[in-house]
Length: 277
Image (spheres, rainbow, N blue to C red):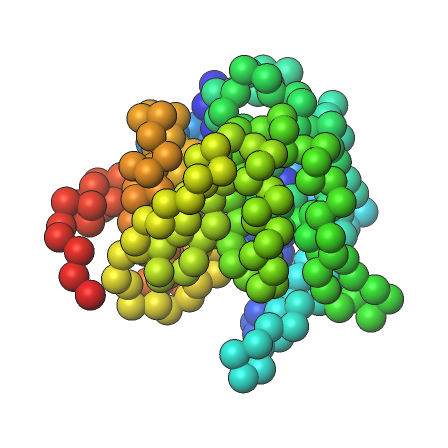
């Protein structure tokens, strides 16, 4: 039986030699597995999409869609332009297997608005986390992705336990965070190598990051979020959970793709070492 449910599309990202698997569901489920949990993913995918070997021991409830959500990221002088080439059909509440609806930890991780506000109320007994980047995206006929207002925020945040987003998600508008933190019990704003700011009942506290040799930052925020929820469920201590998540994410940036996601033993060893900068 799964004990960590991730709802959101597995996606494919364009790379020079074809495609690689990505998305919150991918990074977070591998994080949960490596930290000792039994994750499950609910997603919609094209029938010809072959699940990669990295997900071989993770349960996936997939529903057929004409397309698999596909992103193409173009980097130039440190800036990213993102294109959404294909979008899978929205996930529906009935896509969730009945046996999975009682999972103790649930994360809502949309990438392209594939979840609606109904999902926030589906798991009243679970620890429910949200990463909202998929609700913050819009795209046009050119397939270029741009930021949009999070119109669904007030229909979602009062019904979930933890909001996790990055400074980049806010596009520099940190006043939005002031609005969000009043609507949910715990909120976290990640700040890359600097660590994160944890808001508990609206009160902020900075938690320092861990030194890392950055190779690939892709998915680090999802790794952080998964580790945070797991440690919060174990300790009920948001600050301790943030430190644990910072340590976990510091590993993930040190290798490409999902290959840097650490085991719990690795995380605990890093936590035991004195911080040096």
